[in-house]
Image (cartoon, rainbow, N blue to C red; front, side, top):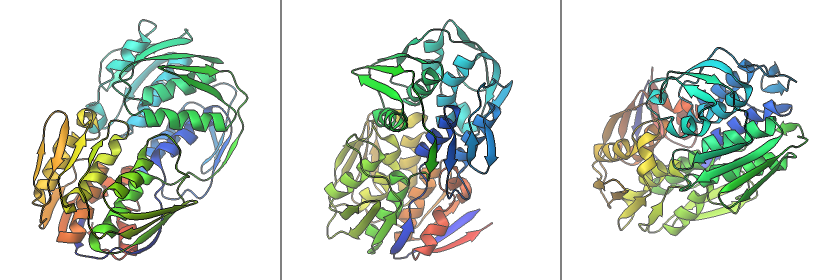
Length: 411
């Protein structure tokens, strides 16, 4: 599909896109208790992968997104994870405690992502035929103490929290540095809110046996995905109200985009579950380390050219192994819109620029298409393979249209 985007003013009210991170965690929670997710329609590709994963393990889906826990889970012979790194990385520790022999595979973007940290953590009890997908995983984890590197992905650590909860408890020792800590806190907060007993003590996480309560409710909205709507309104001179977001917690995370935009000069207001964005008189460049929230890098990149000074995105090493090499795809997309940008191993530097009409093909990375879509609202632009946004937000283009975006979708 091609998205032809014309200059537009973005204003109005919109429901926040469903949080992929919360959604996957809530679906995986059906391994521990019954889960009823309300008002889920046209779910993202990654949510569908998580849904299929728990059903392959034996969870019963009584009706759409109503999951019944089973007493005994099973280990399937093969699993396909599409492009969902979150489900893959959280799923491997769960499969390890179940035991068995299973072929793991995914799409081309997932096949390029390394598995070294989890392979090292599970040795020698669980073996893998390859350090990347496709791989055959074989064996069973019998210990209740895990040591794992924190530098590759926090999602493995979240997966071990679920896995140890399944088997009555244990301890996770994380070897620093620990990247994307916010997602570990998200997992701990969710599990504990439903009866779990998980404690973070420095670089160790203690998981105790618990009696888990059923979950009935909606999947909260996503700040990172919502930020594209917020930024689109700012740079086009509009204003927007985004609803169904979760209260901002104390730890850093995707919700940190609210504070980052405020530091850049964006006028915002958070009330209960609503984020109002009123625009800006003058935008200022900032320096932001995204190691704890790497998914915000494309969002920051979409507003940075409009600031009055350079914006520096630091902590970018892990961006190389996202859905695309995001250091490359962020910079190449910005250059397609005539933005001046430099990058090295540690940072991306984006300079104030007069953007011009651009044209990209989505590099199998939903957030890069969203970045280009936002820029196009100021300069005009074309995004080919625009359906790649379905990975996290199938409503992206429709929501922008409902907010005043002049967008023609050509199948």
